[in-house]
Length: 296
Ligand SMILES: Cc1cc2nc3c(=O)[nH]c(=O)nc-3n(C[C@H](O)[C@H](O)[C@H](O)COP(=O)(O)OP(=O)(O)OC[C@H]3O[C@@H](n4cnc5c(N)ncnc54)[C@H](O)[C@@H]3O)c2cc1C
Image (cartoon, rainbow, N blue to C red; front, side, top):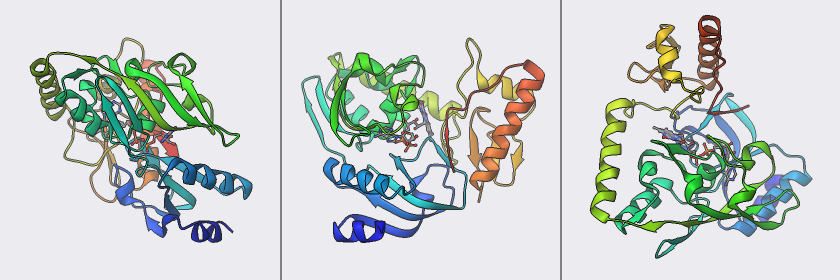
């Protein structure tokens, strides 16, 4: 029994827990268990025990790119927030998968290091952000990743280098290969002019505030931009800005965002996504590819 395992090994966990504060859509699903491993060894032992019992689970960072498409997740949600070590020595950074990307972006910018200014508005953790190859303003996290320490499907920790990680637009090795989890990353940043770096950070912050519905719960851009097009523009052109299914609404401010205007269920968000895809496909012959992850 998985409960015996987590009790016997003194894991920090919650039972029958609300997931509302663990996903940025603030969808109020319940999970059978939410577990917070305190180090990579606890994480590896937990994954091994879950696999042995064929128990359902998902590994998450800050839940800022997921949609819980269920009111009850009958399994274990593993949150990596406690793997949050960080050491910055010149431009060489060793950081746990559970460290906040925004915090790292501020830490490095204030030390005069160039490369993560784009990330100050991305509310993810470092591990997931590398797995998603998070990016903005024509920059991506892949450009500063040297290597990652990974738990592989044989329950071993292996070092994978940048060139093994198949990075592309919002994509990496981790999206295509299940059972590999980043536990730590080594990044390399260059020194720059501190005043210019802080100015870039502040310009990007203003741009986000002006263009994104940051006052409402969301999970960022819903769809990838099709080659040389903007998903938001296509959605606006089919007249869906402001359209809602129960609490899930296409943002009035940015049509590539779905916001929770109150008590949205994952199911509402997913129905709205399907509807947008159908309408855009019908009118423009373009299939919008989902950037967010649906958790069933
Ligand atoms: C307001 C807002 C603005 C945003 N702006 C941007 C933006 O500009 N650019 C952008 O790219 N994204 C943006 N996002 C989306 C999101 O913040 C990023 O994709 C972020 O990198 C996800 O990190 P997370 O920790 O929340 O991941 P989660 O949502 O917790 O997980 C995402 C996926 O990664 C997997 N995963 C989690 N941890 C690991 C790990 N350690 N190893 C391997 N796989 C793992 C999970 O299983 C899941 O499939 C935005 C979101 C919001 C709410």
